[in-house]
Length: 443
Ligand SMILES: *[C@@H]1O[C@H](CO)[C@@H](O)[C@H](O)[C@H]1NC(C)=O
Ligand SMILES: *[C@@H]1O[C@H](CO)[C@@H](O)[C@H](O)[C@H]1NC(C)=O
Ligand SMILES: *[C@@H]1O[C@H](CO)[C@@H](O)[C@H](O)[C@H]1NC(C)=O
Ligand SMILES: *[C@@H]1O[C@H](CO)[C@@H](O)[C@H](O)[C@H]1NC(C)=O
Ligand SMILES: *[C@@H]1O[C@H](CO)[C@@H](O)[C@H](O)[C@H]1NC(C)=O
Ligand SMILES: *[C@@H]1O[C@H](CO)[C@@H](O)[C@H](O)[C@H]1NC(C)=O
Image (cartoon, rainbow, N blue to C red; front, side):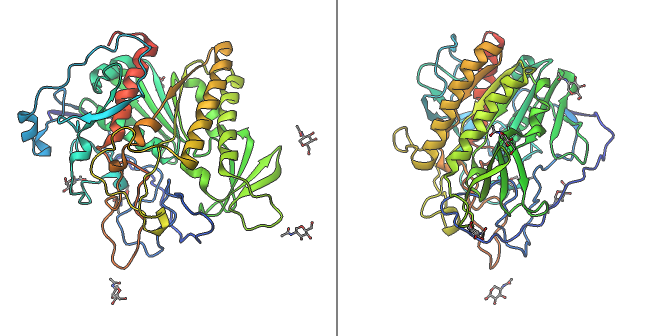
């Protein structure tokens, strides 16, 4: 690390909003994960070093110039010397190779950053900090069947993105993905956070590269209302046929959007159509029709496609990043379920099933509809399939290494988010290739 040129007045302090976690009355939610943005099920007497904010804004805004690849030394580097040179970038010559059918193959060169070279790792995903003992889970790369997927190259990516802006829309898994991208870029440059301190959504600027990254929190993609504005554990009201204008209002400024949603749809919610209550999920009200979570999930994507086409001013590329499955084994999340594997599944050892398969199918169906409409309106909808690769990565979650062990408290294991570094870094290998295909550059 050679030079740190400060781009902002140092010591810009962010108004990090703290929210007190509440004990959630565990209603009828059986299998799934409230595991999202706020870890709302954490016990009240919280003595853990957790920052219960949606975003953990980085405290440094500096440009950092280092050699192309972060030093391997931080990871006890002898494997870097012992092992063969990187897999040749290979031929990804066409736009036809299916990036998402493939397998995880060993990649002894990984990971490409550590928690000392990257400062934007969210506490809950800083698995090495909290004592995760194994490192093998960081040493795999995704290998499509019919081509090579080049490893993320920050210089190449920044060149592809020059003059462009990228927006992430979704929940904390979208944030997890964005933070992985920022970590991968951090061997070359760190962004400026140019968002207002009070703004929950963040705009990062890479001024030297004229490239912006934004993240917009919209876990449902559609308009929501909280039962209690100060208590996110209370049921949400979902206005299924209305846009969430926190993001639809800003999409026209983006060249690339990565839209995702998933884990929030299994929370207690009330459903409205045309402002009329039509049903609910896990509500205790006998007069309200109980509906499946897939009901609201489909609406989220219908609206998404409807709105981008309807808005008409978005002319970029919208990637629908499909649902990344969780991996609780031995019980549901709130009954001791855990994810303790240390290596990926081979293909066909693990298949998507049940609820998650339903969600994936809905996304593919709605994407197909969006693409048909988009051909007419000029919006390029693309598949970004994180489902097929990630169903195999039960080894990539924080489990109990997203915090320090707690005395006399049972904290559910996190088998939803992904350790950084970790398999979610491969999403940026995919992103780089997906963007390259859109921009039409040679690999
Ligand atoms: C929480 O985040 C703030 C701002 O990023 C930081 O100053 C503080 O030390 C963090 N607290 C813990 C317990 O990690
Ligand atoms: C990084 O991880 C190491 C363990 O690999 C841990 O000792 C250290 O505290 C972590 N540092 C930060 C800044 O998270
Ligand atoms: C990045 O964001 C800044 C601040 O909003 C804006 O002035 C600039 O035009 C944006 N650049 C791109 C490439 O979108
Ligand atoms: C929506 O509700 C309003 C007022 O209740 C009603 O006038 C209108 O016809 C409804 N629209 C649809 C499409 O049902
Ligand atoms: C449910 O509907 C019945 C009949 O319409 C009504 O008498 C009752 O008060 C309703 N209960 C609730 C909780 O709204
Ligand atoms: C943990 O629980 C045990 C038994 O209930 C109690 O004796 C002990 O004081 C508790 N420790 C803390 C740190 O609360």
